[in-house]
Image (cartoon, rainbow, N blue to C red; front, side, top):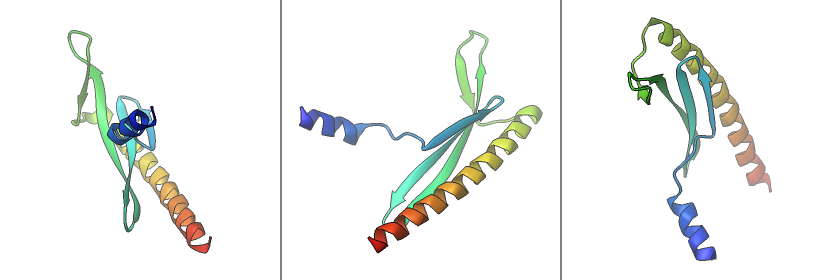
Length: 97
């Protein structure tokens, strides 16, 4: 049973460390762990319903969605700064231990 759990954990799809929505714009913040530390980045997508009422994603933004993108980028920046500070503090605490 343990082997199956470990195998599923290894093949599990990475999840964002944070996500939020401003209007039609969805933002996700991702952690990238490397030998030099953890780095964070953000992705953005505009969600909408097509003519058949199915959800679709786009990386193009009209005037109104551009403002939502700007606000989402600002929030993502603030969150990334906080995550970087926490990661740095954790790394320093691990050195001291």
